Image 1 (cartoon, rainbow, N blue to C red):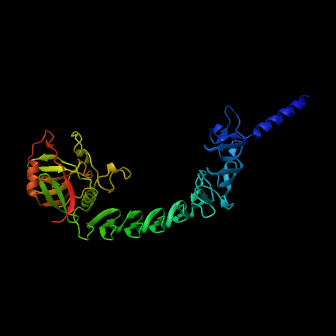
Image 2: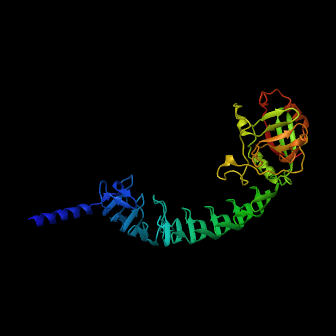
Image 3: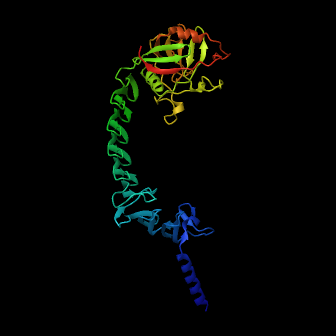
Length: 425
């Protein structure tokens, strides 16, 4: 009788273990999965459901690891893929679409060792495997290795690139959804190396440049949408050496106009001595960055200073504390726009009346967007601040601005707003 009870109990335990449970009820301890309050790793069948009630997946655990055949379904139920595990590691995957077409390989996982091919579709099943996969990646030792291809939903190729030991190697090409080539570049050991070109969706070239060991090296050209050259810059090991800019009509940009209620100042720019400052200034001008800012610091016999975006509002307390370079020049955090500053480009241009120079803090490479215009010769600033332009018309406007009533911080009592545009004399 006792033996019979033991056999019945064992049978009940086996039956109990065979009943699938929701995987979300399991707890992970280290690398193993356990049932709540259990002391031994879980063995048995599991499943999980989407919010709409359809089964997301079902499979089996053995001693806390995924083991055996698992089936994953899309949220709309139109395709699936089957995975075979051995103690937690992917061994084989067969993707099946609604038409029964199979694809075999191994998927992207966090395991350190993995070889094979990954084909991705998306959980909601909005793509049709019978036509194409969305992503095709080949792996070796857990890293992309070989050709990788991405497709758009319409079947148009999106990206094609080659990896070697997890790093980009050779040609990288991308396309717009209409089939027009978008970008083409070359990599060496994971870094851009060689020609780099980018096109607009209409086929018009937008950028063209050359990289060496991951850094811009040589000529970099940008075009307007009408095909007219916009900028032409020369780099050496990522450092901007020279710069030229053109208007959309093909005329070269030499001057900018600063318009105020006191009149207009026309300034000539000096890209030959301060290419980075001029490039940043022109980019800010084109983007309208300076429009609505004020001359927030005016000191007779010295300078009028402006270009701080903080000066647009009515809070004067932070005027003179804001602004950044128009692009990343190697100073600040490349991923934080507000931190970008300009490297010093001190030169022999003197701080005479009308000189356009860049404001900065005590650190040489701290200039952002704020600039000043000399209201008188200030030669003590020569070779200590970067002169990058000169007022060639409207010197009288400087004197009108510098002599307005101001507060104890030299901020004009009445705001003096500016608009800056590209112009010709």
